[in-house]
Image 1: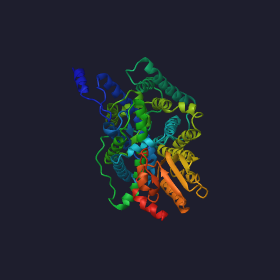
Image 2: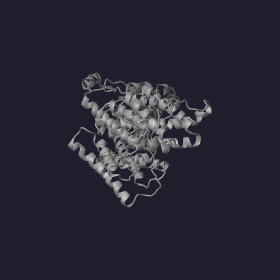
Image 3: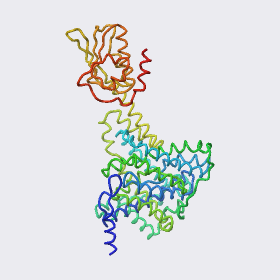
Image 4: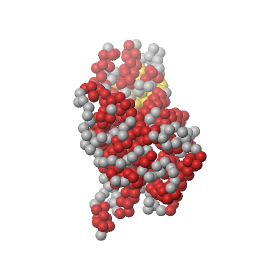
Length: 543
């Protein structure tokens, strides 16, 4: 009977593309989602504790953030299957704020960070993530895989203080001899189970099977290996509502606003890239603005309940997706399991060997790295290959958000330079003696110099026609260049006609407007930015 009630309840749940259930849930799907959530929750514990140490706060501050951010984004986020929580990219920014001003200022910063992210979502700024080129995405996932791999190496060091372990330092001495061999053996066993399990059965997520088997081996054999409890105790109570104890004045805002702005930007960039990555695997699109709002609401609430804030976690999202998680249920289950661990199951979870979790993350590394990018480096344009390598290196050396920004800027500059060299003209004379310049290629800020060099006003005949049928006027610099050329011919007393310009060019080219010739086949595109308010300034510039 319980099974029929569960099936009846599941049948009323459906998931839409924007986030609701897209396929009818059934007991099999619910089991897969819940087990995927359990797997994610087990992997979240050491990550949240470690990032809390990086930020210089109590482990529960990181665990509460993982629970609240994970739960809220799972319910209202833009992509079912994504996992959010406390992340290292945010923790490295928070550490200086906590060291200088204390944890209360961190909570206030997280609240403001959330409000900024909500604003970005309301203004639909998330759509600009589509400007990230594919080479940047390849470099991003490659750098991410390397970062995840390097983060696990701290577990191969001699256990030290909990704080050192959280920073991946753990005393600074590497394991040797039997302890190292045992650690490597357990990691290898976990990876082997994860690789073999899908070939045997899909009833249990492979990562969960790997963790469970290694944990049983360690407990039954009484092996002395590092465990989750060696990092810190995860036992605690329910998060409590807590208004940050900071002065409500301009001085406080001056302290927290720069941090909040940086954290909001990093969190959104990492979340939206994760959104795209998960979308490619699950075949989903859209949801960027919804994800911005969800991240903002999650961080605002987290800051008011004593959490350190967070964003999407690509590693855990990959674990969830590879474990079969496709709906919001897996993310909700992960958050709730994490809360159960904190309230009731700390003594059990603390016995899980770290080697099992390291093995899971190593498999995430293998699955995340874009191995095909190594094969295509010699085939793609040199600029794209450079961007892939650059973003990978910057991701490892700095952080994910900086790497993406650098990659986008370099790609944009390379694109502008390539298009700047495309401008040229096919020149011919008519039987009447007029000279026609047939412009080829886009006219924008990068190509205006080349455009100007195409003309010879002093030696040209008295009648000159500039035809833009095979070109496109893109910005104000292009409009200014056209008016400058027209002015030179007019100053020499020569006649000039401008043909095949769009209607808005007719309106915006104030001085040269009378030189244009209307045609039925004039293009109908619009310049990206409305320069109507600047037309007077253009006229003044040529006056």
